[in-house]
Amino acid sequence: MGNFLTEEACASPGETTALGERLARCLKPGSVVALYGGLGAGKTCFTKGIAGGLGVAEAVTSPTYTIICEYRTGLGVPLYHIDAYRLSGDEDFESTGAGEFMGHEAITVIEWSERIPGSIPEDAITVEIDITGPQSRVFRIHGPETLP
Image 1 (cartoon, one colour):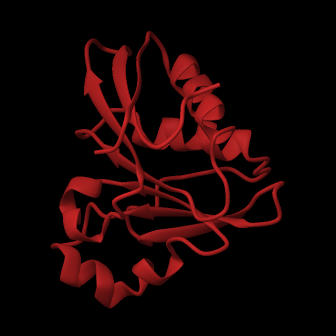
Image 2: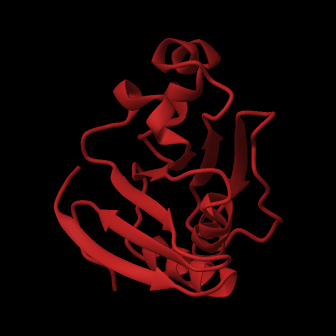
Image 3: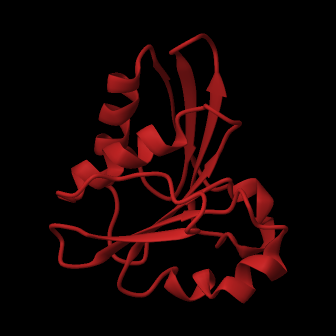
């Protein structure tokens, strides 16, 4: 999973969004963020924070049915938001063409990464989310850099 970065507790959706905004400061073209966590863990809320931190002006929603959404960032590179929940594995992921969006001149966030383990790059930033209460979560963030 990469070098340990941080473990952070968030007591509300607002704190979850703020943590996503902080992580956004570490991202650059080619970054992949792999999110792991159960239903209602806050993956989309966290992604909204990343998008806001990257200067995305439009509303970010879960791409559960569309599989992938593209947003314009303030960095001049796209943000691809991928949801692997409805996929049946790595082969299914590849057949959607979503793998072609990772890396290169884009930033990619993948929800339900545990469903496509073989498609997650080794240098991805991984975010494990544990539900600790009705609105509280613990985030374990691993990757090649440290959070600002």
